[in-house]
Length: 125
Image 1 (cartoon, rainbow, N blue to C red):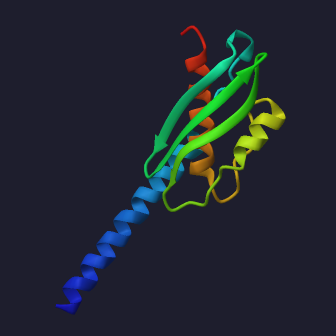
Image 2 (image 1 turned 45 degrees about the horizontal axis):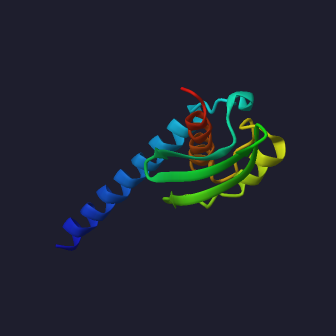
């Protein structure tokens, strides 16, 4: 009985490890595009993105074609560390072309991609 339970635990842990590695690989190659804010009207826009098991939903405030505020509405960061500090980097650099937070690549990329989608929601597309 102990051997069977041990095998089940090992298989579950291996499954979790495979899913986690797939998430890291997907995040590594995910492209976050810098979006032209000159075409975005003032307002608040919501964007979301997910790389299982991480999910991020943000609300951004655009004023005078600039990101003034990024509020993280929801952030399920799975097994990774919280990367919400990336929003300050985006605002400070006025760009989505910022470095991910060390040790939190998947969370960083999800937040950045959610911001990108929020900006796109503010356009006429």
